[in-house]
Image (cartoon, rainbow, N blue to C red; front, side, top):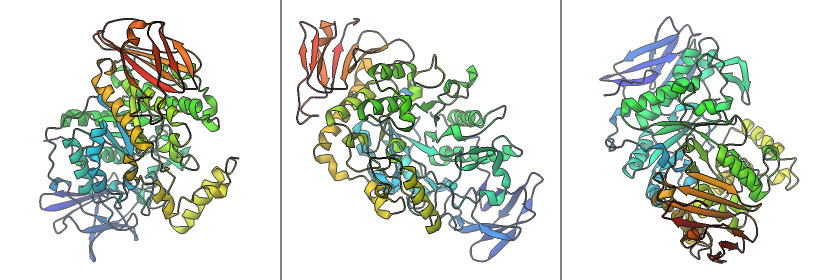
Length: 605
């Protein structure tokens, strides 16, 4: 038995349903069930309304009227079968029969993330269809599936960051039990599941929280979406309870293994105890309660070490953070991007190495923090989809360069994240797509084209219309590519690298100890040296990012034991062999490439 239970919304208890909502400014609230049943609710001094209904049952639809206004869906609805503007459905999560009783989660150092959008991951775009691909992800070497936001949104297609029904999985992906089944099947395969949660704003259409209380928002702070969510103004404790319950429902009712928090730098909070710290504490308490490993990871542009410093050491206590500076350095280096935030990054081999050693380039220097707390990628939904044409890194750089970037990402001790299709260099873009009503949709389309209107490389008319169904369809992965070149060889490369990451002693987690040495050997080449925890095994890897050239590595012993090359014909159909002169300790590259050597003795470079 756990010590947690849901209290908001409609909760099935024995032979009745308890309804509870917060509406402190309302005088009267009426509960509507089905076609004609109307029930008055009892108000408490702190602004909650309650009702215990014996005749209500799972599957029935319900809504609320406030002082004669409405009806409105439940702000804590578990399911919106008719969309975000329709009535809510009573759901009893306890009826699902789980099969993951023995699942205890993964140690953080073993996480290898695969970020996917449920609607674009498969042609069907459902939880069930995504679940069918889980064995593929397991075979690839992935250990953790990260689902882009699931909270229901207006229309039938959306990235998910316009979510408004935060407790209800998007009905276009399937039912709540379909999502539970996906998680259940993932756990049976040994895969963790993370959900992307958006706590910095509500979407622009269908967010009825403000109809229940103006105190969900505060004018004390502004963020890119308008008035900030109230985490530090009067009555903020009730708003916090709403979001805390949302987080805990994903964990208790869907058995997810963690949350990825969207843009926490946009959560404005000047309180003495930050909401993020309260959230981290609640999730870690749930981890103890459920006796399984559960994590909370943030996307935060501020690069604040205190976010991932344990609470016992005075930090916020989050378990990890998306460290995008590595991506930015690599994109600047390999694709030459220099607009916007890329202007802050040099993209030199020295700058890349400094970022890796530090964790990030910008912000305060983190000290004593484990490498696994930094989530690294060479592409993710933002870094692809926020480009005007949704182009991936492999659409811009030569395949040889793409192989090098992939190898560097997967050989570092930081936690790697792949974006769906990256592992086979998917030809499909990942575009920005929405399905708003016509007036809002027109504004979104115009705004998107104005956003990129100053770029000289294309006209604004070429920016795909986010509202067009074909924009969404173009973003869906084409799984038939897997057996075709050049995709099949890239897939083999990813599988081999992920296997090495798990099987090579020197590539196992190395904490914060100096078992990692990485340096820029020249303007085009990075050298990586990693040693196993017992010091008995080591690997040396060379990454040539640009052109051809030679490198004297000053170590003959390593050069006698090459174990992997990005120019292996299995990975490079037009292979150009990386030559090794072990007598003179010289490695020669004909073009960008990566090569790995193994040592079984404790030796320096």
